[in-house]
Length: 346
Image 1 (tube, rainbow, N blue to C red):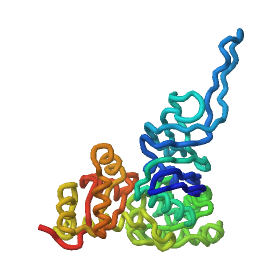
Image 2 (image 1 turned 120 degrees about the vertical axis):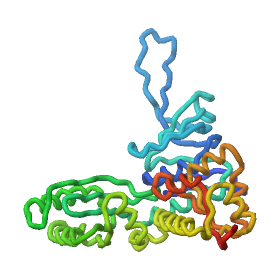
Image 3 (image 1 turned 180 degrees about the vertical axis):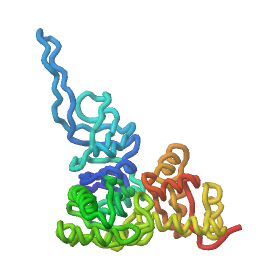
Image 4 (image 1 turned 30 degrees about the horizontal axis):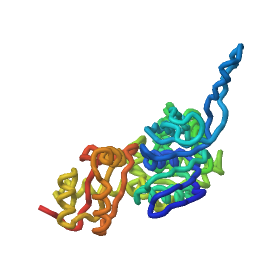
């Protein structure tokens, strides 16, 4: 993400930016809220004069509009964020309009900015300088390819093929198909080749012989499985962290692992709003974990932001989890909010 302009006074005002990736659109989903004023160059139908005898085809014309946001939809597979609202500045004031925000669409957002939202913008700007990372989890006859995004690992391909160490032709055909998929998924990306056994080592040898430009960007990591669970193992082991320092999703996976360990031994953890509030009253919160969807829902019903500011004032850290990703989904099942504590409370 690139920030073009910041005009803020006491966290009130306008930020102009350009999202550069699907990850950036995901961040904007949690930055833009109902009531915000969003400006962008968009297209809208302009009605022809009504006194014409022969109607002409109505075409959409480009124009800059400002809309008061009502709702948003994040379309991961079509690579866009749809922002719908009523026109506040431009033509047809008061009419409904939808701005389709895609990578490289310049937009301006005017609003009262929360501290967490400004942090998210800064995080997206920093992340734009990090290398892309792709994980291929492979065993005999099956491989899964996942793209590491800021909101989780997105499985982009699964390849299954008859294979065996004694069947050179079939095995090479399998490795060749995995390589073909990686040429698209791993373009301009670092790669982690993971899995049980020695198939991953053999595949790296195949890459070195056939696609050395891919092999030179690859590292090996042992896991007990492939697929989503294999991706999770890679994250927990810190392989992505070693490639991309401060990777947010790796941080989420490790925090969730710590939380579940503390819960299992009835230790320094609290989950659910009542228990977390109790922990705060004791001054025990070291790190507050909250799911992004829980945060969004809470803002519609109550003043959750005051509670978050109180936690920060008491030297607690706050981590917002993505519910697109397994740790965030686990957090939702625990009530959407939890905390790692400085000390155990009864």
